[in-house]
Structure formats: C-alpha cells, structure tokens
Length: 195
Image (cartoon, rainbow, N blue to C red):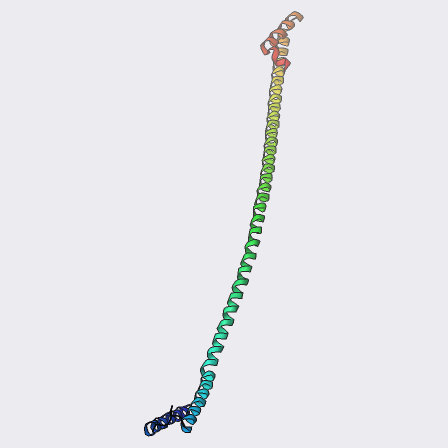
C-alpha cells in the first residue's frame, strides 16, 4: 500500500510540474498523452485501492453486518417461539388451575363426608358408652338391691331367732305365739316382706 501512495504521489507531482511548465495556448483542455496516461494510471490505482479497501474493510464490515442480521433474525425467531411457548404454558396453567378448583371441591367434599362419618361414629360411641354406663348403673342397683334383700333376710332370721327364743322362753300357748308373730311383723313392716 505504501508503494501505491508513493506512486500516486509521484504521478501527481509530475503532472503538477508538467502543467506548470507547458503552454496551454493551443489546447482546449490541455490534454496530452502524458495526462491521459497519468489519468489512466490514477484510475487503475484508485481501482486497486478500492479492491484492497473492499478486501480489508468492506468485506469484514459486510460479514459483520450479515452476522448481525442473522443474529437479529435468530433473536426474532427465538422471541416468536418463546412467545408461542409462553402462550402454550399459559393455556396449560389455566387448564391446570381449573382442574385444581375441581380437585379442591373433591377434597372438600371428601373432608365433609369424613367429618360426617366421624361425627356419626363419635355419636355412636357416645351412645354405646352411655348404654354401658346405664347397664353398669343397673348392675350396681341390682347389687345394692340384692345386698338390701340379704340384709333384710338376715334381719328376719335374727328376728325369727329372737322370736323363737321368746316363744321357747315363755312357753306360751298358740294365742300368745300368734300375737308375738304379728308384733314382730309389725315391727319389721309389710314392705320388708314384699321387697
């Protein structure tokens, strides 16, 4: 590249020297063979310079612009596909949310059923416990009644023994015995004998 600029500089210097030294009186534009040759060399030099610059500058810039355009295209396509994916995910989540509402309703219905079953079970257990307590109370009452009956029988036996002792001790007649029995029965009472 340094030779091209040296060559170009020397051509320009020569042309300037020739223009200054020649007489342009007879020529319209001052065209001569040397000037045409210099112009042609200058054109070739500019063409070579353009090719070199396009190789050095334009092609890398063009490649960079192509890569950038490809990247922008890929980013746009990626954004479009991401948008479609997001739309699909949104629809899936909306379907899942509707499903979740149904699942919540099913879970609540099952919980209510279990609660009702537990309530019925607790009530049944409470009734059984109450029946057991009542049965136990009846057994206790029967035992108390039996104890009372046994005590009354013991008392009757004791009274009978006392009465027999009195009868024997008094050696009394049948009328006296009848009267003693009635007195003893009166002391014990009619209710004792009936229960």
